[in-house]
Length: 596
Image 1 (cartoon, rainbow, N blue to C red):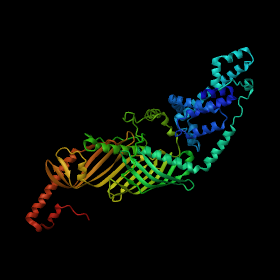
Image 2: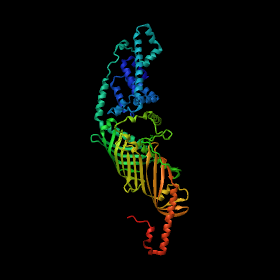
Image 3: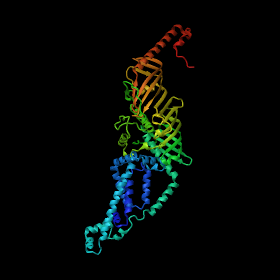
């Protein structure tokens, strides 16, 4: 009944056609915006315009709510209209807006937001004109009635008329001077005096508290971005931002492990960075010289986290015949798949998502812009698809250098890792160099390096390399599925690999060399010690579930090596029995020479 009376007041009030049309137009425009995170600038400007312009707020509210519901049904239409605007003849105009200071904050790169401006504007304009004409016709009709006429008196005595009067007017008939309403200006005062005061006060308030808002926004954006990249909860105790000196500090960062929510995959006491404030009005955030202090990994969380729902052309990969999946070799394959899937997710955050269809199969290499947008719309929803190809000059987020020294990892007791990353960005092709990550332990027992030149302006291969030295064979064998008559015991193994990562499908080509040292090889029940032997292993296919190939010829060479070492050991033993110490330097030829 409240709404009906408000509508009755609108019919009998002093609202001008300008106020009616302006309220419907602004309400529909706001209703067709996809959300604040997609178009913050547009929503702020339209809201301020609604306060400043003397528009009818009641109609703006009603039309805005109905427009929001309508926008959900018409979202595909908004998306396609946005495509016409952003990728059509007006592309140059919108490209300049998307990369211009202040206007970059409006969210014009969102297809749904830009298309929503057109559809929402048409819906609001047509609705406003129809309502304005209807109210005008009502007033004309009422102005022709004579209050003292028998017809008017008879009409007001009817039950339905009295009920309608109560519903729309709330009491007795208080008929205004409709003839005077028809003579009033069609526009009236276009500016709301109180609204102008509120807008000025809002601008002053924002100016005074700019640093506070900037800190909160950046903190919120970083937390959200880190959670999306991590796939699980990221805690942040506090954040400090000083735009004058260009410094930012994050205190108490803890990222939950998406595969084990009761542990932190990363925790840091403090993260400091130099912030470039020059591009903030262009919606660009550049962090220079990020330093991480007190970093650890694998610590138990006090409160378990929660999971967050969230192109270089490949060269011809090496053909590894008879390759088997990770389940055929490793007992805890599920855990490994989860870990590798998480690594793949991180890499995709650096390189962009791997190109694949909705069913998980690789997408065609020659994928057009239209095909890519359709695929992303199906996978992520229309509102999330943006014209990122129109962003120029610099990435929206760029970390030029990140260092974390002395990182302790629960799975590597006694080791400390030094981590360095460069040129991590949302648009690698716009950064000055290729994204690169390097991890190295203090003893050099563990090392990892990834460089993604293929997705940068430099072009080239996306390379991966790692090594792990001194891994106990017994520890390794406990996690493997050993079949057949060959097994290993004792000694250590050094793992080393250098290969490529293909963004097309998220696949790898990673030959691994496993060097066995002082290992006992059991073949057909006979145990023989091998001093040193290199065993090549092939890793290919999807990074999250790679195929493993161990060459049968290499296994034969291992057996031959074991036999040769056994023969040398037996010959040396026999000579020692017969000659003893008289053999002198003769035995040295059977011994492994010492390193100088």
